[in-house]
Image (cartoon, rainbow, N blue to C red; front, side, top):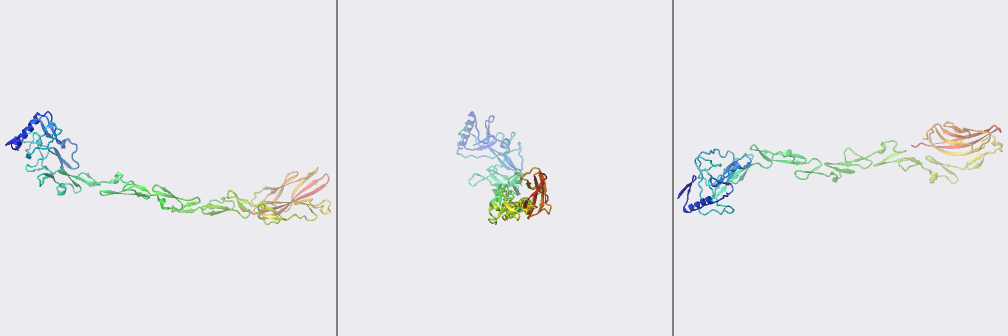
Length: 476
């Protein structure tokens, strides 16, 4: 028996007719209707109609794909695949659906009314009214676009990528999808104007330090002093672990720095250390002689001197106190700057007699002493050649005073070079002054005379101080 319902011819038997009548009755008697995905319920038409996802969904297809609405869904196909235009008033033919005699699977679970599958939308037939929003294939095609009839009679997806029936650009990559395919780009490329263009990863800071862009990829490298920790980041290399420096090493970010011990300086190669000649810095580093040593220096003093506690000045070595002398027990050791001398016991020449260990006297009762000094006192002193002038070096003073007497002080002998003079400081005292520098080593014997004059008793007498001066060589 044949029935025509809204432009569709259905041929079926009585059993199919009863099912259809039951479905129609259920639709009219139901209070509400819930449709499957891809359909919405039209209350005026009192049936489920297709949703045009190409119009309602924002950007349903990616790239250069065109959205084509399907009954209950949509497809993404390359643009230009269908050249014909679809007008609403043009006659269209629809595939004649065939239904198996067995009933549909129970899909009413959760729905208030049973559904009518594959009911074409209102106005789908010829004549005025809105047409379908998807391309129409010929009635003889048993499967929708993108599928083909398999050996078992079911529709299977066509792999356009494998059959090379796609229209992807040669720079693009075909990716098969259910019922269609999509054109994309390989990793490292992006789609610009339908063409796959290389992505310059270096512009986006993919590498921590150095970046080299290559087609479809990029390569990272590190500056000197860094090591690739992975494909993007760089890790500082501790160069000090390889002991590149001769002395000390200080690791820095991306490099290292060599340090030298005290008394050394870094060479031009930046790794070795050269000894620093401290003695060349100044002539006054040591009082006498500076000797350079690896990393330091030392001061040396001449014989008769030792290095003082500060390590730079020289002090006289008193051989007489230290016992480091060659004097006999009968001799007297006399120390002077830079040396010593052994003094023999005092021997007074006649007519003088010994008054004490260092004094000889000529008695007034002895006629031979009438024109001679009454006493001769022996004194010793040392004098350095570096002594500045003028300098007061020795003082004389009368120990006995006589009423009405006055005193005259003078150098009687030994001052042939006129290096000294006497300056009277009071009526009973005078000072020996060094007027000119003396170069040593040298021994000078001066007779310093004190003349006593007493006009009251008409007395004139004198005393002598025999001063022996040991002039040491200026070592500094």
